[in-house]
Image 1 (cartoon, rainbow, N blue to C red):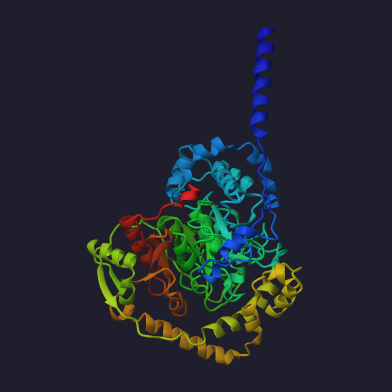
Image 2 (spheres, rainbow, N blue to C red):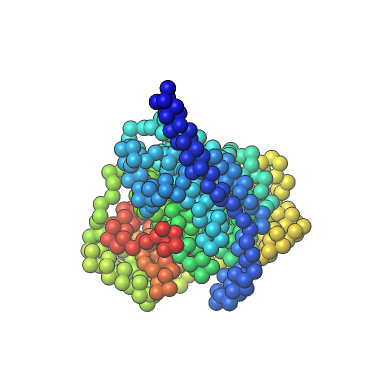
Amino acid sequence: MKKLLYFTFLILLFIGCQKTKSQQDAVVFKKYSESSAIQKQQDHENKRMQFKLFQSKYLDMNTVFKPFENDLEYFLEEHYTALKPLILEQDIPTLQKHIKTGRLSYEKLTLFYLYRIQKFESDSSKSLNSIISLNPNVLKEARARDKNKKENTEYAIYGMPILLKDNINTKDMPTTAGAIALAENKNTADAFIVEKLREKGALILGKVNLSEWAYFFCSGCPLGYSAIGGQTLNPYGRGIFETGGSSAGSAVTIAANFAVAAVGTETSGSITSPASLNSVVGLKPTIGVLGRTGIVPISSTLDTPGPMTKNIIDNAICMNAMRGFDQTDAASKELAVDYFKNGFKQKLKGRRLGVIKSLLTDSIYSATVGKLRRAGAELIEITPPEVALNGFLTLLNIDMKNDLPKYLAADADEQIAVTSVKDVIAFNLKDSLLRAPYGQQLFEGIVEDTTTLAKLEIIKTNLTNSGRKYFQALKNDNLEAILSINNYHSGFAAVANHPTLTVPMGYKNSGEPISLTFIGTPLSERILLEIGYAFEQLTKVRKMPKNYQ
């Protein structure tokens, strides 16, 4: 009897301790006074960085995290700390090995990221305003992945938590493009690439902030701002360095280790720019390599999704997971490319790469060129011809004027009231301080542009020819890639339909990241990834932002 009472006491004591542990102070997202921070921001030398606000006036992150209250109640700081060495900065093959050996599980991996996002985003001194929504079913899905583990997962996306730019449709979260006009865009099918990710077993963790309407909305406004998500901030310098755009949240969340990978979209520089400024790997594929159905558009001529990761291997794995022929996308291509089959070799010797002479004045670029030369790459200095991209804005104007209504009719929630750019402008004018504090000048320009479709075709042809002329050295000098900096030449690559891969190259004296961008010929993504991997292994410069370790 005494033994029974003793064991009963121990059990009650254990339960009591567990309750005490779980009854830690609940994390609450509180609005804070940002007046002094905004005032300080007005002294920034970059006018785009002179913010009018930081926090979202629309979003309540307490509601976003509500589905995870019970699970996070029992996931404590000591659990998080114990898992950090297994997860932070690790590539997919390493994470899959930890799961295979039992050191980790898909559920623990997902809980880790949810805890980490909550930890930083609820801290007013470290919040990045990077998350718009979270998949309420993601932990249930993670447990299912654990229950149905596959044998060969080392180089697979299976069970990996992925974040999506919030202009990519999902069936379980709204797709807003950062705009209040689409805040209730809930009842949609998965975008084509999301279907592919789910088929491969990926976990869609949530949606991330972006430059509203993919930065084709206001003129001269901050990069990474949206009325839904507020002002996205760069973890390497909150309010000091730009995030890049429009896929700001996709880059910021991966830089801060909030997920394994993210998906962004690009029309001209919208993957390359934020990836570069947040020291992550970003790939903008050739148009048609990845399907675009279910993505809020700017331009059916130039738009493409693409992966954003901490390393090249993960980028290739993501490409494999998203590929496929999209029957409802007129630009989609039937390809049989495997972006990681047989792995990558650390080989730069004999690679013919173009060095843009005018960029050699940049000390980091110049030093990088020296490293590549010493590693055996054949470097050919080139001076691209002076080429104007006349009509570029017109192309975007007329494409969006026609493409956005098609998305709203075919891929948006039937309850969404706006049917055109003109409707969105009128909707925003009803409460411009909330819905368009920086104005909507580019949308107004779309409505005012009367260019005909016949004239547009001429503009497209001329732009394509101009882009190809700019990169004529790729063919003339038999180059595998041209080396650029950040998104310096994204416009030319966009109109020429050349893929671009940006890889961390270093950090300026200020601490701001800078990246090397490889520009290749159409459909050369595999080659770019191989070269990028060799460069990454040679330099290994990426480092975590110091306040997010």
